Amino acid sequence: MQKIGILTDTTSDLSLEVQDTENIKIIPLQVIFNDGRTFRDKYDISYRECMASLDEYDTKTSLPVIAEAVRAFDEFVEEGYTHVIVMTISHNLSGTYNMVKNVSEEYKDKLVIENIITRSVAYGIGHVAIESARMAAAGESFDSIVSYAGRSFENQQINFAVETLKYLQKGGRIGRLSGTIGEALDIKPIINMTEEGKLVPVDKVRGRKKSILKIEEITKSLAEKHSMDKIYIAHGDRLEDAQKLKERISDITEKEVDIVDLGTLVSVHAGPGVLGTICIWK
Image 1 (cartoon, rainbow, N blue to C red):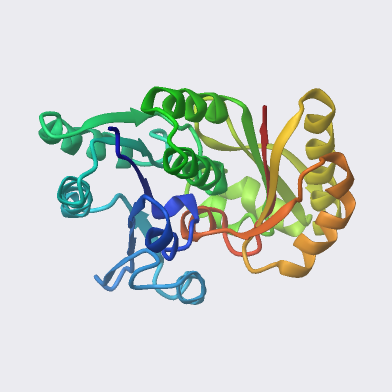
Image 2 (cartoon, helix red, strand yellow):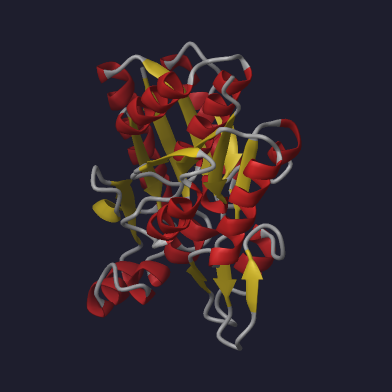
């Protein structure tokens, strides 16, 4: 009989508590301060703590240490799992996928492992991880869950409105001159997770209100083209904006639109105040 586990990382934005109730293990990316201190995302440092230190310590993120992946696979073996489905942050945003895949090779005699290329981040991964875990608990086969996960990662789109250009400029995603002029003109970029799994600016509007309206427009357009399975509104400490957006888009899908907290990785690179939608269709 198959016993199937799910391995993901903290960029999935799942709470660590799901590990207590689901067959999921979550390995942490690293949060690095310029004074030499390193923290395990979510385990050692919270989103709010990270955002509070963003400017003072020139905060960066890095892939998990190898020992975290080894520990997770060891636990799967010790707990009697036979199969593991790995879904980590997009390989074009982090070296996490390659690191975990390399570690998984050492367990091929003990576990059947599928390393999925997600090309995703945040609840684009979190949703699929939770649903896959529930399918496994319900007795679905390994192959059917892998098929579901692959399809769900293909059938999704993520778009974010960014509150400031400062952090995109800092990370080299826009030029210094563009960033300076953009800030002066109150330009707000729209960030899209591309089909290649990269977060790139794809549009820009003037003002926060228009940027949120743009996210609404994009989301409604996707809902017209696809039968939505789930829509999440993800925000970086902007609950009021998220609630207002939910009121405006709730009628485009039969299922409840859920508001979720955006985690550290996107916020470190795009800054605090990010607001967007994660759309997953059937």
